[in-house]
Every structure is written in C-alpha cells, then in structure tokens.
Amino acid sequence: MSAASDAHADTAAGRAKRYDQAYFDKWYRDPAHRVKSPAELSRQVEFVLRTTEFVLGRSVRSVLDVGCGEGNWRAPLRRARPGIAYTGVDPSAYAVQRFGARRGLLLGSIDTLDDLSLMPQYDLIVCCGMLNYLPPDVLARGLKQVAQRTGGVAYLELFTREDQFEGDTDWPSPKAAAWYRALMHEAGLWPIGMQSYVAMAARGRVSALERL
Ligand SMILES: C[S@@+](CC[C@H](N)C(=O)[O-])C[C@H]1O[C@@H](n2cnc3c(N)ncnc32)[C@H](O)[C@@H]1O
Image (cartoon, rainbow, N blue to C red):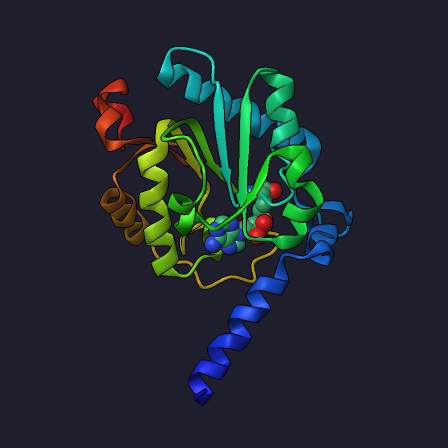
C-alpha cells in the first residue's frame, strides 16, 4: 500500500470510528457540548412536519431520516403523528447496533440508499446535521438518491461558507452557497426556503415565488 493510500485508510478508519458512543455522549448528552435541547428539536420537527403537510395537502405518513444517528427524530415525530412510519439510515455501527431494532434504523450511507430495502418514495426525507460532514463526491451522489425518494419535502440542513454555525464543526470547510445551490439543482431538488426542497418533478405544488 502506498503512503497516499495508507493515509486514506487511516482517514476512513478514523471516520468510521468517529460516530461511536463517546461521540453521541458528548454532543447529545453532555450539557457542556449539547447544542439542541429537546424543546428545540420538537420545534424543528413540528416546523418540518407542517411544511411537508402544507405541500402534500395531507398528513405525513412516512419519513426517511438519513444520517439519523441514534434516531432522535423518531420520538418527536411519532408524538406529533402517532401513525407515522419512520426509517433511519446511518453508517454508525454503534447507533444501529444499540437502537436499530427498537427505532427502525438501518446501517447504510446516503450514497448507498439504493442498496437498502427502502420504499420508492417517502413523504418526508430528513438530513439533519449530517450533510456538512460529507466529502463532495458522497454529497453529490447522496443528494441524487435523496431526490429520487422525495415524495413531498426533503429537509436538508446544510451550512455554507457564508453562515455561522456551532456545535461539532470538525468537518470539511463549507463551500459557498452558490456551489450548494448548483449541486441541489443538478440532483433534481428545488429549494422552497428554510432548508426545505421539493423534487423537481413536483415543483408545480409550490408557487413560483416560493421556488427560490
Ligand atoms: C451530528 S450527527 C446527526 C445525527 C442526527 N441526524 C441528528 O440530527 O441528531 C451526524 C450523523 O451523520 C452520520 N453520517 C456520517 N456520514 C454519513 C453518510 N455518508 N451517510 C449517512 N450518514 C452519515 C453519522 O454517522 C452521524 O450519525
């Protein structure tokens, strides 16, 4: 193995180990580091549900949470809409082993959704606090797979070079907003504001002024 591929293997191994129990203990349970309270998460979930339901014209029935971590979105989603079918996907072996059976989490990556046993489309797809960690090629491939499965709204939280952010910012330097806009367009996703997107084929569901 060359020095370059050794370095790559080290990086990949490091990435795989990163989302272990210590990571989630630090960013989700330690009061010194936690960035989102349960009340803030509930507000975010309510906002995303209502936006999706306004676009769909009915209640949300299915949610795919990509990069779901421990599946923290599941409880507030099901509190708000008890009948909702929730599926999470995450590459963290720790999260899926510990919570997979109880919370409906599958081991996988955003760019290998096609390999998983998923529904063709979901009313709502959530990518919260995870897209900024991805290398550009994984992000590009992953967004295309998300777009194909977006039946209503995709909520894609992503911060750009022009934004300020807090929390775990150990990620590749964010690119300019224009770069992400072009990537979303190429993937077939139309922005409707507040980090929310509809699939290009469904853009007639929102008015021209809502399509940014
Ligand atoms: C900060 S956590 C966010 C977890 C969850 N979405 C939330 O809001 O609590 C980032 C998550 O992104 C996941 N992740 C990293 N690379 C990924 C990839 N290629 N595909 C899907 N998820 C990924 C990590 O395993 C980790 O669980």
